[in-house]
Image (tube, rainbow, N blue to C red):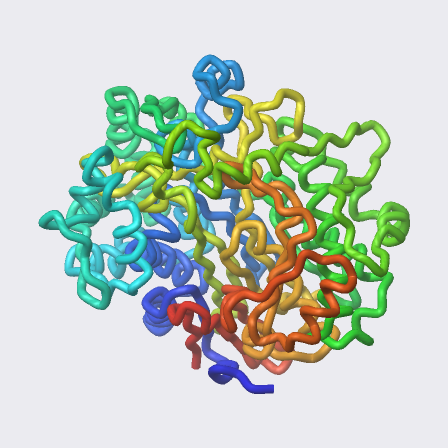
Length: 593
């Protein structure tokens, strides 16, 4: 089939990411003797400068890694928890029934920095100053600004000018939106990274990395955030101004953890995901449902395939809503949800027509509860204020945030799949003295007590961030993933199914027209759902759209190149490595040799 670019092949190393500068940086690290873990860290820091509308230094970063020497896979949890003062009662006292999507109230402890430091310290070989040097150079001297960054800044310019003055100082130099395709410098961020490097002192490489971690979580970074949150009330999406709840003590209490991935065996492959503090296991649940169906006999671009995959996704995401949350605070029955018996029964719910219901399964000892108020919240998304006047500047920055992704393989066979996100420029005001905003992942908690994903102090929000990894015949095979919020474990699953069942290579599976559904409540404020909605890429023939509508789907077409932001890298038994990246948006790139 036609592809927009070749699937890259190599034997020395390959890397793919959502921006060509990050991919080039990662390859430069490999060429200079670094391993896959060093390369991923350096690339990740570059993404924070090159794609500030998609991730930032104070965002989140779940990571799946394969250690070739040990032959093991691990998850580094870069999802920080809620502040100690963040209780349901505290939000109820403010008259809120949802955590806002912008401002200071949804901020959690920023997890990305410590996650990258753990990866670098425990599996990498480079100094923290060397890993930061590429990004620091771009921040100091300027990074080529892709048009979407300029457009994002323009979309929130009135908010920055009237309310978030610290963001105006960073993103509106000389009072104007930086022009696309010009160099854009971040001197305050460069100063922050310079100081981290200076404070990274110690007798060993590991000690120097730990010193940088202390500077972030016990030192000047935590202190600057604490001062700003204590001293400012910030306009957010509610139309009111609120102080933040995050403190320096919250920073000091947390560090990134290393965990075992969750896995599922599927036709000679084992897919690995982060735990139920993420939405990752819904990928595995979809496989468990589809395992009993003849996916290989379906046209991978036909209506049968779309219908079947969509209906499996509806059932899996319904279970996400009912059962997933931070396992440190609730018991998530993943063994039941992935069992043959459970999925044999659930598979029978996939019929010939589209379901309009949100149908979690029944697990002994659990009472599934899902949100049914999402339809009433759609007016917030459309700007309908219920007669209270026109939407104001407070609503700016709510829609349009996304995510990044990185995949790396080195000559030793080490592999990384990571999905950094959060800390978007449009989500929260920049912290003076640091030059970057905080993340707003706390909006994913529910304020209804007793749910697996209900807000509690020190708890991880159930994130949508979801890197993917697969073994083939027991050996590390592929690192892959995508931005896309709720779509991450739809698009990645579609890519995997087409590769396994229909023999597509990475680039073919990425370029192929894709689709998604919005059937369940979104994880993002204002938590809307669109039951039955399916969006297919514009390149599908009208006959597929008509077929889906005849089956009862609320189906529509998007633009020709609009579904999926995927990248991936795989390692074959003969030692060849292959990689591919997303052409949509014209930023993703894969390199290798």
